[in-house]
Length: 255
Image (tube, rainbow, N blue to C red; front, side):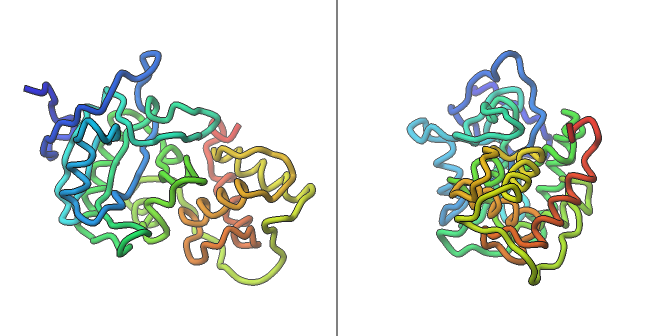
């Protein structure tokens, strides 16, 4: 027997050996959402449960809404890799990882079916309630690892999740013209942009240079919060949306 018991009763169980102990007695206060990025759900599930893969997640959500639990929530699954959020680097110890079946950008990246999203919402709400996870701590894999990851991507319906009580969201400003900041720019406006992104949680250096990391973080931000145009350019719409997100953070979190 694996000893794995369902933390979320509707979930089926498929134990993965790829887990450890959360550091320093940590309990999860984040949810990290991924897409599987593989051709089939079965292939993804097998990979997450193979010892040689050295990766796992707590849950996998199928397209039809079936949820599979692989790692106990109290344990540290191996889903985040090298990542940063709010200055923290051991995201695996801080989070519950949820894989959502979708072939991703390297495959036939498709819309997420309604039954799947409904299941994701129910799972996230249940986890957030039990672990007291605030909305602004529900993040994308691309948010915490913007140089490496694009998931769950711009087709993931963050607005729909927010409407049902999952995640932090404001209506994005409409993408249009106006002044913009882009790769190669430098100066105080870049510092201000980087400082705001860092305040929200992104792992970015405030150096006043619109470098590769800044472009990657802006791209990740757009995928999550302004998906109508994902180009890594900080236009007026991107900056306004970021301002509004910061202004709606709980005061204790914003500092």
